[in-house]
Image 1: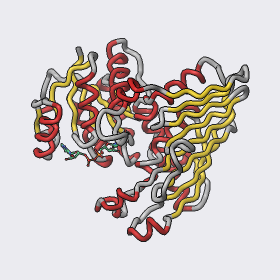
Image 2 (image 1 turned 120 degrees about the vertical axis):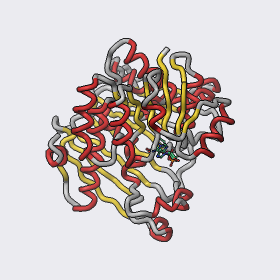
Image 3 (image 1 turned 90 degrees about the vertical axis):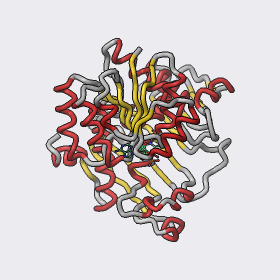
Image 4 (image 1 turned 30 degrees about the vertical axis):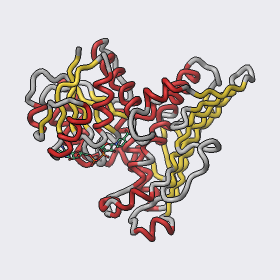
Length: 354
Ligand SMILES: NC(=O)c1ccc[n+]([C@@H]2O[C@H](COP(=O)([O-])OP(=O)(O)OC[C@H]3O[C@@H](n4cnc5c(N)ncnc54)[C@H](O)[C@@H]3O)[C@@H](O)[C@H]2O)c1
């Protein structure tokens, strides 16, 4: 069985739950520089193999995979170290927060032959998996356009000191999920434009960057898509609307995946309309502690897929290239907000020699 270690035990808590519940992996060690947090996790999971020093994971020859859940700006260095020490890597989203590290990381993964998988968790949720499977078997025909959003009342988050720093952007933290959905179906986005603003709720709290954003995308083949994110206002009742949702409109049908509600609706090419929800056992797989604010089930799904990719030698997606593509798109969106102009993705990639 492949052996995994986890770095960063905030969000990495869900990964601990995922790895411990999986029969495909063996969790051997976890690491956080905050020892109190290590102790808390050790107690919670009755798993006592922890360290506060990342080197202990890097230098442990028994570890096959390192899963990284540190703050965004540290991912590049932590991924680099893992590759240099011959480990396969799972890195949570967003893969990196600055494309200037991308070229070196691409070269390094080629040179070491180790696999890097980006933990875009939302793809591994039941409604998203079902939507993708239906799309791939041709149930709705050829894609015409896609709409995705992630809206949440995250005003509680503004109590965290770092949320009010100049460096904090909901564009990266929030919109990386629906933007990944757009790229999953339309990988070749050529140009993006968007508007954003800080709502009065955000301004009152001292937020420095946009909390309300709408974007449109154009692919190289002319198809278009849209995405939006609104983070400081109340949301609709869950029975009526979903915080995160993806709609595919296609030549012969349409489908919509609603995330936390575990709800999926489809109009197939025969005209049949179906609304699907999942029962308690599925809910229990996804949500294991404290409501629905964590991602244990999604992480277990993607860790097992990554293990299969190593054992059977195929590429698990999103891989590093796809992760970099999403970061490039997010950077282009950021530039469009700043300039008020459409931005070409190729220009952003060229800037970094990619
Ligand atoms: N759905 C998802 O996939 C999802 C959801 C939430 C967060 N995330 C991602 O997970 C990452 C972490 O977010 P979080 O909310 O857990 O943040 P956090 O600040 O709560 O946790 C990060 C942890 O990393 C530890 N750490 C930092 N540097 C370290 C080092 N050099 N060595 C050892 N430990 C170190 C910190 O002590 C902290 O406990 C972010 O990149 C975030 O975007 C992904």
